[in-house]
Image (cartoon, rainbow, N blue to C red; front, side, top):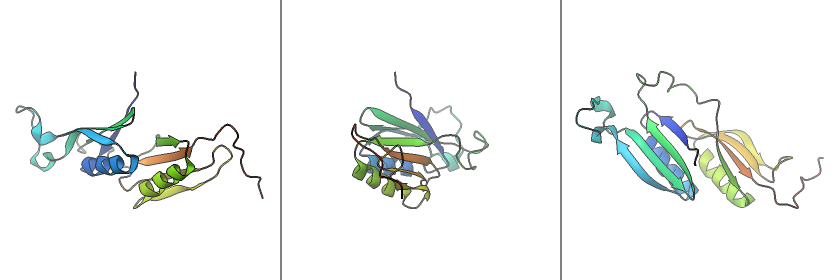
Length: 148
């Protein structure tokens, strides 16, 4: 079994997934535009290059995505809320690299830093409007730095 988050965009799905593949070291293995759907599927010409299905594999994990027109997703233009895509690693330097790359052109909501639960954690909204959390898993002997 696998739980996969599906992300919705307005014409940026291909660019977002190419960006995520580069940052996370994954591979886009499916990207189907609406214009290549079944011949009897009505498609507004302005959406023919938008993706109806995209799949990114990163190791044994995956993200799914699609471009959604406002007539099918009335809140698509509103800020994303109620979820974050999360990235976890044992390597604080790798977590920092991913955080910095994902936050480029976006908005940092919590700067990357040590917390009481992690040697490195940060939150952001990427350039595509997707919220992320980047977390470093603490090792068995890790202790947070003393306050003050």
